[in-house]
Length: 458
Image 1 (cartoon, rainbow, N blue to C red):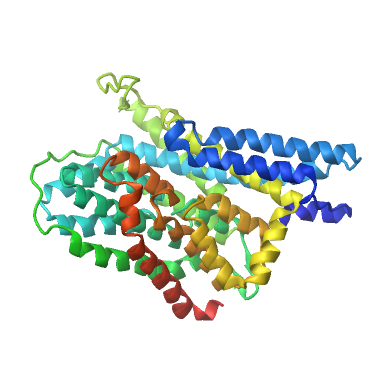
Image 2 (image 1 turned 135 degrees about the vertical axis):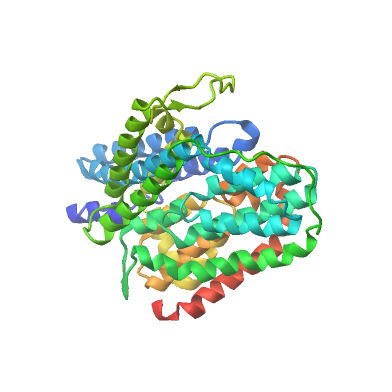
């Protein structure tokens, strides 16, 4: 475990799993996560309980070590976890900024209105939106992808609740599956990539993730093929005017692709963290936004009342401000909480129990089932903190299961939770639950496909 490396070097590794400090920290994290899961009902932002809990956990740990005259150990462990979060934070800020810029330039609206104008049947739209979600989520995150395609589904089939329900399930499965075979598609894959894991028979590199393409495709196709027979084979009514992309949209899309390439090359060719490539890409975007501003371009963002009639001079930092800060602070709280529990010894205990007792394959499949209930980010961070000795194939298996396991329930992923809000009344927890058996078949089929196609990685 990374956090225990510091204490081991000093010869003062302390296991506090049965001490009141450890038990109190564990209970606090459990309570905080219950509050996070109840966000939809109590309307308390999910970042608040975990950020507060992280501070209390590390304060308890630091107090115990200081009272036993063991200096600097906790500080070094905390800084180690903070550095991991800092890399993730900067990476996500750049990605979110690009997504917000493209949204403001009407890239997604242009795609949405283009699809509506094609006059596709419900079944065709079911497959097209699912395919686009699968293809877009490896570049954009699964949350943005699900919301974009969800807007299309609601625009053309809002009155047909059966179509909306099945399409939303399809979007959740497709977006989560598509995000697993690219380091940019999901937070969990990004965390695995940034960890720069050296496994027993090789290293997990950027290109290793693409071995999950076919298993991820199977994960989406199996439930989609089952659900398609329940989709009405008729055309929706209504029309929409085509919205054009605003000036500079194509250049910004190109810069985003260049930014991704910079992150990959920085990691693969130069041995640097991917975040430096992303920050360099942000510099490209800042320079281009300066050119747009000098040419008189305006920022078209709604004010507090949703009014778009008063555009302001083009400003890239207004897009940075629109990043999902609640989500970013939630990541901080989760990483520091799980890091603290790891420092106390709980992750070593769990690792010994499931990876040592059950075997890597069974443990990794169970991780996916857990992520259907608990968000996959703390689950994956816990696995990375345990750092079990596994082959590349097993690391790809847990990446796959943690990514697609959240599709089993509507609350298992950010995409599902967001669509429940967007399609309120049509896409519900119990509506998704009725088709969970089809999603579970896809989950099992994707695991079998991975273990068959990528047997050489095990």
